[in-house]
Length: 161
Image: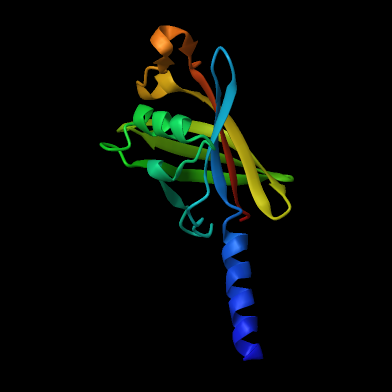
C-alpha cells in the first residue's frame, strides 16, 4: 500500500511540474490590464528537431469568465481552434538563447526574434505583438466605452533546452 501512495505522489508531482510551462498574453484596455494564460500543453524537448507547440485557444484562461469568453471570441476559437508556435531556429548567446519563432493565429503567420533567458530551469522570453499583426481588430465593449489596445505582450515559460 505504501508503494501505491509513493507512485501516486510521484505521478501527481510530475503532473504539477509539467504545468509550469505556459504562454501568457498580456494586454490592456483604456480602463484595465488583462492577462490570459494557457498552461495546458507540454513542451517538446529541444534537440535536433525544434519544437512546434499547438495551443488550444479554448485553454486560455483570463481568470474572468466573461473576459475569457471575449478573448476566445476575438481569436475566433470556433473557426481557428489553435494558436501555433513554431521554433524555426535558436542559438545560444552566453546565458541566453536567441530564437526565431513563427506564430500562427487565425491563419495569419508572423515571424519574431525572441531572446530567451534561462531562469530556474525554464526558458523565459517575451515579445510585443499586435492584434493588427494578425488582421484582428481589437475588440470594443459597451458601445466603444471600453477599447482594447492593439499591443499585446506574448510571454513564454518553457522547459529549458
